[in-house]
Amino acid sequence: MQEREQMREQALLEYQRERDQVDAIINKMIEEDHEMMRITKMKQEQSKQDMILSVNEKKALLKRQHELEEYEEELVRRYNASQQARSNELAAMKEAAEAQRDAIFRKLADEEAARRAEAEYIENMRNELQVQE
Image 1 (tube, rainbow, N blue to C red):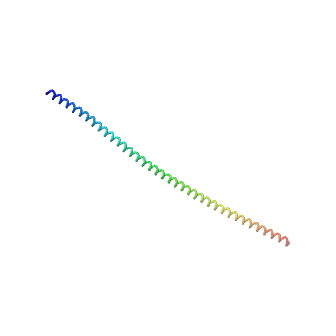
Image 2: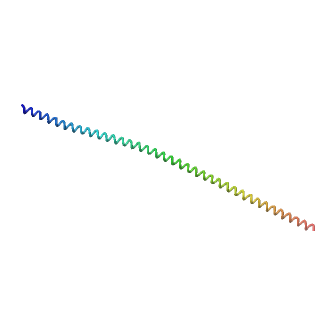
């Protein structure tokens, strides 16, 4: 009977040892699953953060491009305004030069007309003197 009791105890010990091994394996699998879920969640969170960062970077890039476009448009407006001002200045200078040239030509024409009138007057006076002689 004692032998039977020993065998029973031995079998019980063997059963408990095997159960402990199975429990250890199951616990290890559960821990591995938890670790895998933690890693997966961490990767998902990192992907989410990367997407948010990417969206924010894209928004910042688009904003910067818009600012650059506005700056370039302002430069073009300033350039066009300066070109228009220069064109207006040149047109005014040309008009002033033409007015001055016209004034000189009128003065010369008036002087020439006065010389001709004087020469004609002198010629007429000579003719009258000759006729009177």
